Amino acid sequence: MASLPEVFKKTSSFLTKYNFDYLVIGGVAAAVLGNPRMTEDVDICLFIKRTEIKDFLKKVKREGFKFNEREIIKRVNETGTFQILFGEFHIDFLILSTDFEKSALSRKQFVKIYGIAAPLPTPEDMILFKVIPARHIDLWDAENIALRYSGRLDKNYLKKWAMKLSDEAENMKIYNEVQRLIKL
Image (cartoon, rainbow, N blue to C red):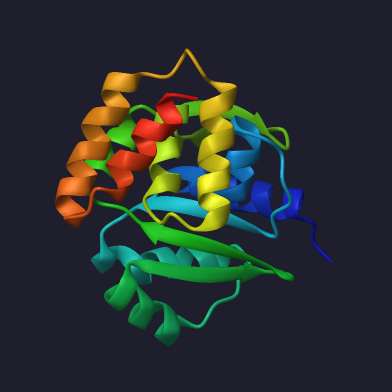
C-alpha cells in the first residue's frame, strides 16, 4: 500500500520526467506555506491544453497510474478538472489557462517536499488560489499563509489580482477577503 509521500514523489517525478508545467496546490502546498494539516490527496495545477489530455493519459498509464478515460474526458470538457489514482490515493488535476494562473506559474518557487524539489505558488498566489473557491478549509489555509507571511506579502500584487478576479466573477468576495487577509 502506497503512502502519501510515495504518491507525491511518483506524481512529481512523472510530471518532471515528461516536462509538464505544473504547480502543487491543495493541502500539501498549504502545509508547506501555512500551517501543517492532514490531507489525503495530491492536488496539481496542470498547464496543458484540453486537446492534449489523451496524450497525457497514455503517459500516465505507462507510469502505473489508474483512471477511467471516458470519465476524465467528460470531466475535462465540463469542468477542466480530473482525477487519477495510485494505490489508495487520488491525484486531483486542475487544467489551468487563465492569466492569473499563467502569472502564478511564471512566479513559481521550488520547495523540497518529501525529498523532491517541487514547484509551488508564491504565498501571494497560493492565497489567491485558496480564496477563489472559498471553502472553509481553503479560507483557513489562506489565513494561515497570510499570518505566516505577515509584513512580507506583496500587497499590491494581491490587490491587483483580487480586483481582477472579482471583476471577472462579478462578485467582490475575492477582493474583500484578500483585503481582510493582508491586514492580519
